[in-house]
Image (tube, rainbow, N blue to C red; front, side):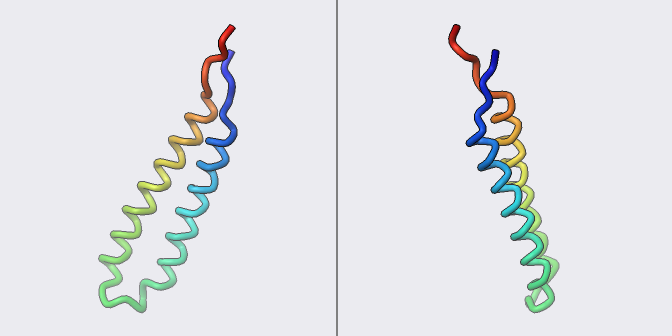
Length: 69
């Protein structure tokens, strides 16, 4: 029997939402930048890393830990 870690899942969901919000915010600010292509390349990498970490946290929290019998 495994016990889910719901706090880890909730933090993962919050990080995922923040990564999407950051990407969309920077997408609206990119046309005002001196180099919008490089800005969006950097923002995409950062959002991707945070999103990947969030997905790993969600999956890890859903798998959970073994309960001592």
